[in-house]
Image (cartoon, rainbow, N blue to C red):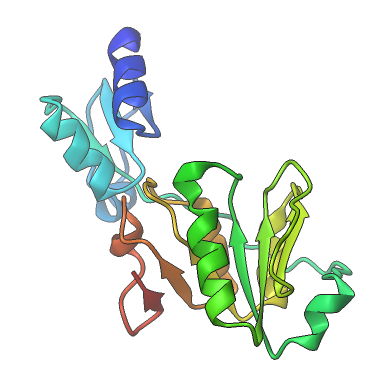
Length: 196
């Protein structure tokens, strides 16, 4: 079964866990998940993941439990670059710098909205020749705390499962604008807490 799970993870990009042996699940757990209470259960992080398992003909004992975070009231002295403070609104994206994360779309939108600061956290290298309103802060540990300093969170990815960065932004009460991929549409509702 480990080889099968590795194949699933690599071919579908799923993240989840395989429970080889579990004690009987409590009724509370059954209520918040779609997981069968049996041994050898494969659990995805959203309904989208479970549907992909089923499309791959993996149908026995599959389910999902939404990603979660531990929300902490952390008091830290965060400082955005001084140049960001001159903008009326701040837009944040936390993602590695790779083609599927669509930094190109981020730049395009920033160019269309020069009155707002666009902040990207997750680049490994110094970014050059950026619009004046784009700030790449590099790779920062626990970057989700920066949601407390911004007005909007965006994630223009080509594909995702159920990103922790969106859940972190939502825990700070930030509206989300994201691609409608993976399980994002399961937690971001158009016109309510953001737009997909």
